[in-house]
Image 1 (cartoon, helix red, strand yellow):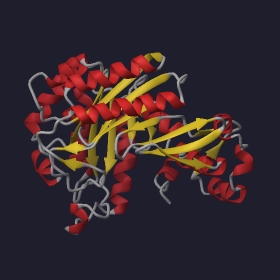
Image 2 (cartoon, rainbow, N blue to C red; image 1 turned 60 degrees about the horizontal axis):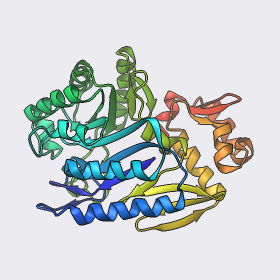
Image 3 (cartoon, helix red, strand yellow; image 1 turned 120 degrees about the horizontal axis):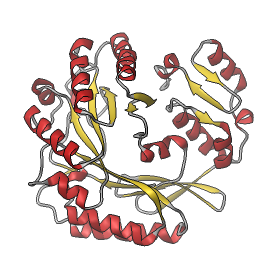
Length: 350
């Protein structure tokens, strides 16, 4: 998989702790030139990989000009073999930069659009520092659904003083729109953000936990199965790209704060910009696979784990800790896999 990071945004949201830059009237050509060179470099390392997904993330990648999106996609197609049903996703904000933005993004080669709405009422959009209002969001939703067959909406919940009934109304709207995929994130107050400096407090932990479990039940009843802690999809619309991270498969990252994981000559590498390759031990990579794999509802496939790390899963994990977690009902285990229960998923960070 290939991740393309576009760090630029119109403004910085008060809850966001991602790397980003605020810059207007930007000449994109030299940045895209750099991305093309980066792709060439990684092709020299792994020329025979087959690309199964490309993800334009950010920042706000819908700020990339369509001709530059197309240039990147076409260059990837020139360099590597491509899976027949390749998923090419792009994150977009609802306030369009230009007329027919979503149609032009599709024509550039994107086949999956992730729309960062975050809230479906004007008061909370303002609180979250979004640069769009509800009317703009509704217009963009209509445009996305018209132009794409594969689409996702991002929403943030567990906002201060939010009730489940008000959140459920937003969920009902999202479901009724007909999105194939929902990414739902609990509001967390991260150090270094505007919210942290203002002393904003998230929703009470117990209420947030109940909101989480009630959200899962509501969406399941409406045909959206949870497949990862924050992600829900109709059948056949799970994100291939994001599953690459959680399954521990290989990916390269292009852009200033992008990361990658590659296995070359049976050695694992963590990759950061520009061309920094830190060798990981098999044990370090195995730890990552456990942390990431437990986020998936299907959990960790022991055979897949062993194929990646060349370590037996049962030999690697702490058996005493495993038995304690089994007895507490926080994980379950079969001969093939280990996964977190719904109760366990509430405590994954711990």
